[in-house]
Length: 188
Ligand SMILES: [Fe+2]
Ligand SMILES: [Fe+2]
Image 1 (cartoon, protein in one colour):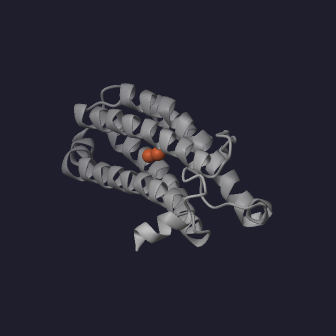
Image 2 (tube, protein in one colour; image 1 turned 30 degrees about the vertical axis):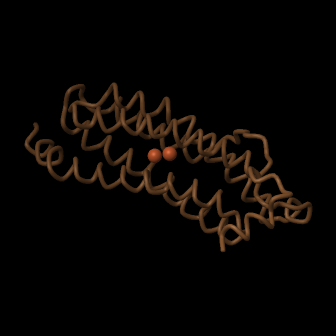
């Protein structure tokens, strides 16, 4: 079955989703591209944001979690670049005020908590989870839009990133609950 379908689209460039001029002019398609540019900016901003958070974290567990997620974030960027190619669009960044605000909040936490304290880590986890939730909301919505517009390959790529954001969020919850919050509470 799948073979037959692929035979039918043999004449088309398989690296590009089926996008015609009508689709390109649609408001929903324009919004979709604009939202992709927004999250593309956000992922770039997070490379630096996660670096700062990693350097400021107290425990090795949290430092490692931030480092791992920084590596994943690089993958998120290259997946988005593939998405732009599939949609026959240039990978551009659109400034995202929301992520700038969330990163600023994390920086303020670093300034207002003591170096080497568990309270710093407890607060940094919450800041990082706010960021993950922003990404989860974005990718969750974009996967659904991609499916609605029948961009299956795009949906698959975005779905992979969505799962990694969700895993990161769960991992942060676990670090907080098994280790950090308790010790932060004991701290003077
Ligand atoms: Fe991400
Ligand atoms: Fe993330």
